[in-house]
Amino acid sequence: MKMEKKTALITGASRGIGRAIALNLAKEGYNIAINYNGNAEKATAVKEECEALGVRAMTCQCNVADNAAVKAMVDQVAAEFGTIDVLVNNAGITDDALILRMKEESFDRVIDTNLKGCFNCTQHVSKVMLKKKKGKIINMASVVGIGGNAGQANYAASKAGVIALTKTTAKEFASRNITANAIAPGFIESDMSGALSEKVQEEIMSQIPLKRYGTPQDVADLTAFLAGDKSNYITGQVFSIDGGMSI
Image 1 (spheres, helix red, strand yellow):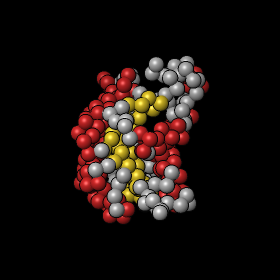
Image 2 (cartoon, one colour):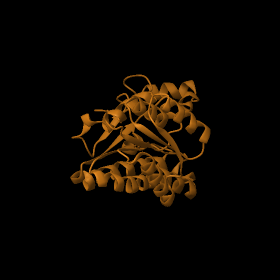
Image 3 (cartoon, one colour):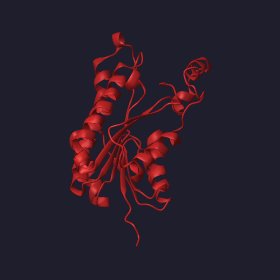
């Protein structure tokens, strides 16, 4: 008897960690909903890559900071695939500056996307999960949400908020067999990290016991574990994936 495919909605899935998560879950047999905000071309490319792996996929443009838009997106995904089994709140932005120089709009924009966006998606997707009394919610936090970081007051605060939201979500929905966990990446290979000067990269490496950056695939593999049945008794936890940086 052929098992019905599960569906995963991944926000910010057109590139980087989000793309790696989408492709990894597609390899695991999940139908994939690819949320993006700005780059339709990259989102379509990820969709085609997922479909090439033998699953159904769709793209959905939505600013996760907009609650009404998120509701419309969730309704669209649920109508297309029948349900949503896994939510990965990955969408996030940075807008760095020291506290004394940070503009109010920079603080608000990061909080709205990273924290409010996570709340919006959780609120609407959880209603779908509650109907079947089962679901996995995985939130992308950060090591700076645990330890802070100079020049990133807005980003650190947003990710600390994501951690607290994750724990609250876990407590509220545990009785309905819905789990919520957070992943806290450290330095992950990206276009941004590749553009850093050699001196800065050496300083970063000195803080990482494993002496290398993580990869998007490292994060995607942990996400796949938390999305699957082998993590059914894990909820409300924060998993640092940082090469030992936070030891």
